[in-house]
Amino acid sequence: MDRFDALQAFARVVETGSFTKAARALDVSNATVTQLVQQLEARLRVKLLHRTTRQVRVTEDGAAYYERVVRLLADLEAADTSLSDASAALRGRLRVDVPSPLARLVLVPALPDFHARYPEIQLHLGVSDRMVDVIGDHVDCVLRGGELADSTLIARRVGSLTMGVYAAPAYLQRAGTPEHPLDLADEPHRTVGYLRWRSGSVAPLTLHREGETVELHGRHLLAVDDGNAYLAAGLAGLGALWLPRYMAAAHVARGELLPVLADWQVDAMPLYMAFPPNRHVSAKLRTFIDWVAAVLAQQPAITTA
Image 1 (tube, rainbow, N blue to C red):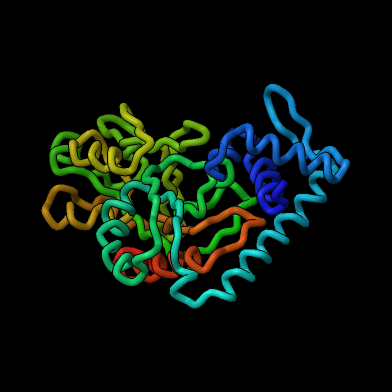
Image 2: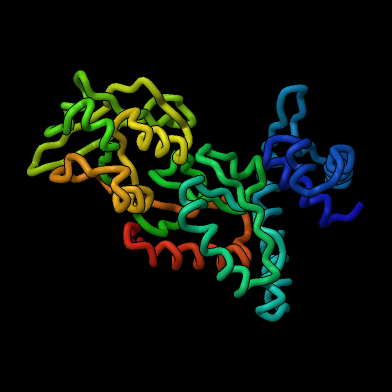
């Protein structure tokens, strides 16, 4: 038994709650992971995991052992990194998940600069607005807007999105221009709904003006769970919508969207880079997070953290 491989296999099973997901993360077979964990348990003469047909749960002894294992694995990686020169440390694969509009409009256009600086870092970029299972899907980090629902993740705030309310000219000609947020809750107005991924509910909008606060749910015939589709629905005149200004700016400049309720303030949306706890933050991950923060700081509609 290779003890290092066995420790890695055990740690990944605990983190993912699955032998299958652990095998996928380590790029080995299910049988290999199973054998490594069994050999580790035999050597220790302790049961580390409870296995059923539906789930894998860590035992009390296994939980205590896991805490020591992750520290040991992190120390080993840090030791390896310390003996490498800076350029050697900045190589390998990073799995990152980012929202689709930020990827399309901000990050992907800036990637030539990143790859010119760090040619040996390979990015696997998941582009979606869904909330990925950072540990279960073995993602190194995620970039997300809004307060993080998963309090177990370690998060670094890298910026804030300034927000506004917008509508297409065709929509405003048909429904009229709202003068108060509550106008959007009555006929003939409509909004485009944005679906929260976990709950399936439509996210409300909170607006402020001179001591007055309004929480608006609006009236929608369409709700979507993707930022690009949400924007497309607004451009098609399907309803008013609230957008980060970096998404709206080009369309406002071309007259495809018009700001509405401009005398009302919409709460800014925080942006976080988040990664799993008990996992060593490699030099390449720290470098990528710093680069993302620098790219966002250059965007006029994104304020720095």
